[in-house]
Amino acid sequence: MKVLVAVPFRPSSQEREVALSWVLDRWHRDGFETSVGEPPEGPWNKALAVRAAIDGSDADILIVSDADVYCSGVDDAVNAVHRGAPWAKPHKLLHRLSPASTALVLAGTEPRPGMELDPDYPLSQRRGRTNQGWTGVDGGGIVVLHRDTYDDTPLDPRFQGWGHEDTSWARALTKLHGGPTRFAHDLFHLWHPRQEWITWGLGSVESDLLGRRYEKARTPEAMRALVDEAREVTLC
Image (cartoon, rainbow, N blue to C red; front, side):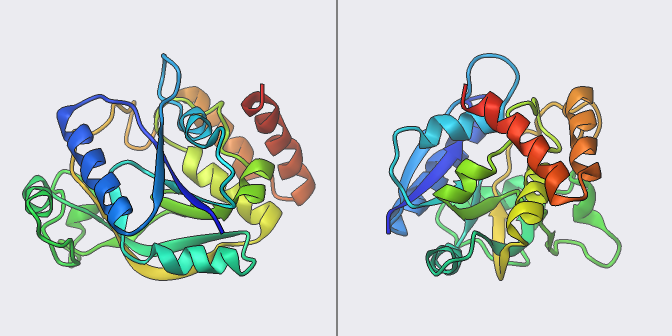
């Protein structure tokens, strides 16, 4: 079994680069091989960044991980995929850390539930839930899957900017391969300046419209047709 951690990334701030360095160190300490992929010039494109990271690799299992997150329970998801699960989600709760908590982690403190969360993030200050994590979306954070699953159902490179690419990918994977094998580990997100959005979660109007197509693809046949469009672009 050969495993590769594919990390999509583009330098944009010192905080992001510091977060990436810390994340890569943790992956290496946990015994994983990593590959950082950067998309071509132009708007951010997660699918093309992942493709750059995995091209040339003969890994059987891929861990597609954002460049600013860490989860200590990824081995469980890897083992599930090794045993035959098409894809797995190692984490349940997402903890988006504040600048102060991130500084502590970078200085050597182990990330843990209950740390101060980013006060500027909308979900961090829900009444009665201050500094408690929330359920991360399927397709985001860290996704573990067999290479054959990714080649069959890749991220769609037509999504540009941030927003909709992760949830749409999860819809495609679920419709064509079944839901993920789920685990309940915690995912910690290191703080950095927020990416540019039109509104919260909306990277571009075009991505929003494409995401709606994924929402409406309610049969395997409809989803297959949509994913095949994406695969043709990805493999060009």
